[in-house]
Image 1 (cartoon, rainbow, N blue to C red):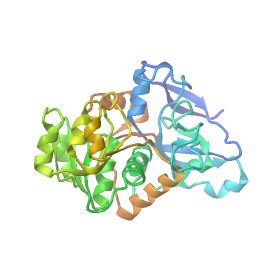
Image 2 (cartoon, one colour):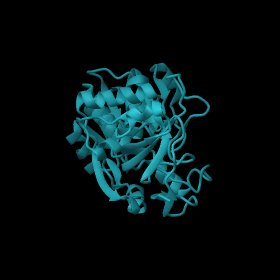
Image 3 (cartoon, helix red, strand yellow):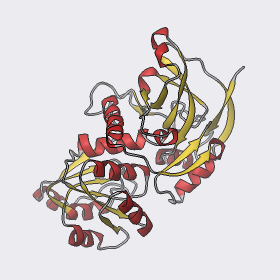
Length: 335
């Protein structure tokens, strides 16, 4: 029996455990991928901490981002995919409508087995050629965060060259990609953070400046320095939306993909008098994913890697994320 190593979440709130599993055989329409790198997202941390409650698929393997090489396929019609270097599209069963996912949509990595493992079986349709300009570890860091950022900026946010954009909570993986993509698109970028060091890191990526959101007057400080914004992309919501609405121009757009600080508190009269558009987004379609990969290659965007841990040290990697120490993506080296 051929076996492989996987990191398994046996119970929400408990540490990941190393487990040896039998290598699966792909069915028709599926491919077996030998993973070489995976990357962390906050989704993995929140499941590990039990923030989502009893997630379906536990005990199971988390992980939404992965780079690897196709070793086997379940159908002869897909044999040309063998030995190809691929990244995994982590939106499962999105459907054919680019505007929103269908009822079966879910994210790779619980309930379906994820990428924190030496092997994974996925639908062949989930496999995309890895960008030629990226290293394996850079490719692995791209899928979930890169897709989320690209759709937020372009399909939902309608970002155009020359516009001014505010990116809140700089430091995490999606925010890093938002900054890099917006710079590559010719926008002027400003950021907020709870850390001066992370603002300086964003400036090295091309941001013009930023302010600390820990200041009660951060919105006023930002407007005085930078002026008003065409677009803001936010993942925190909560009381921060009041300040965001202050910073937006009349007709400005607020795109959001998270609510880590709770339900967004919008100053309603200001929002409707300023004609502000509030646009939700999450992940993206297969066409969004291909568009993001094409953009990364055409603009030579190189993901920021914070640190690389061996697969067996996934728990330590999650701890680093939980402490908020990272600037860029945390990657797991598998083989």
